[in-house]
Amino acid sequence: MNPYDAPQNTPDQDDILIKRTSYMATFIAMLGILCAMIDALAVMGTIRNGISQSKVVVMSGGDPTQLSAVIGETIIGIGTLSILALLPAVLLYIALGPMRLRTKWFYSCTSIASIVFLVTIPVATVCGIILLVALRRRRREFFNDTSDSKFGPEYFAQDSEHRHPNATAEQVGGCDGEKHHS
Image (cartoon, rainbow, N blue to C red):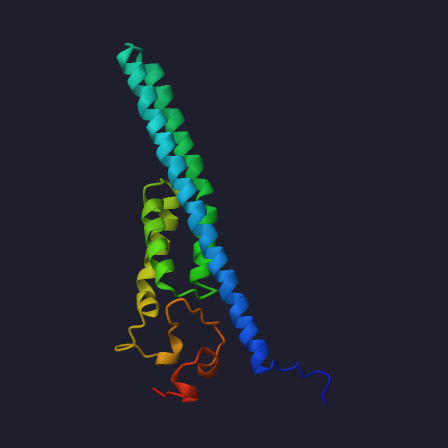
């Protein structure tokens, strides 16, 4: 045996690797969605607080400098939360891109989170646009629509299934081991 040859994984080891990657991708996706929803609630709270403070200033007949201070604080709060929204956006993109999580619940939740990011100006808006474009481009992979795809059925993961990027058709249970050629 050549000492420079890498050891080959057995099919059982490959299955375990795919399952671990699936669990990690699901955990990362859920963590990203949870962080996105917390950030969205914080943005809504900041906006609500800013509106109530500005009402108090206007009703009390305060001068415009007080009102501008309230608006400025609200804008700074939203901007800060927008920067904090980078974490959930990155987590969702990792689950979508490199980890290839392709379940329907992930598509739905990430779509909602992306729309929430759109209103969290300025930084999270860019993240929301990137996620929406990435979801749109990979939509067929989520819904198993292989009719007009150049990929065979083994490429697409089933609902509640995750496919490792280097997995073969036999490992994901597609086509009973047959290979498809375009």
